[in-house]
Image 1 (cartoon, rainbow, N blue to C red):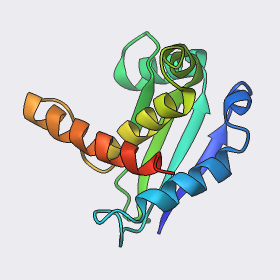
Image 2: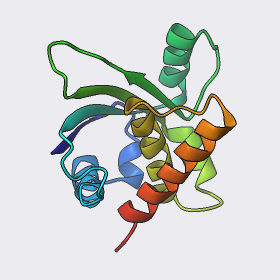
Image 3: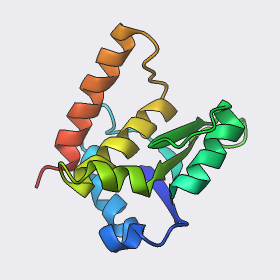
Length: 146
């Protein structure tokens, strides 16, 4: 079973996603039916934050004094092997991008991207980028299927 703890520290998120816990419960139920996730058992935390806080995180952990859309913090723990780590997502960047598309789609792209980083994917090389992008697109199709 996949579990996500959702932490909302910026109230504007709730103008777009009224009930983040319910939103994720539905999305996770959908990816849990995918062959590659079917028997997976892991947890992660998702922080829904703003540009000020994500900039602080980016500066502290990546030494980059600028905002970003998503940050992932994979954790390898001897105490809880099922806990994969934390993801932080910036409201303002997602909201800006959604002007051209749809807020939920842009948001789903980011948490899926962050989750794949927690699961060991990266995009350091072109081959890795292509593999990760294909995986993101497969998951995105599944979570947005009605």
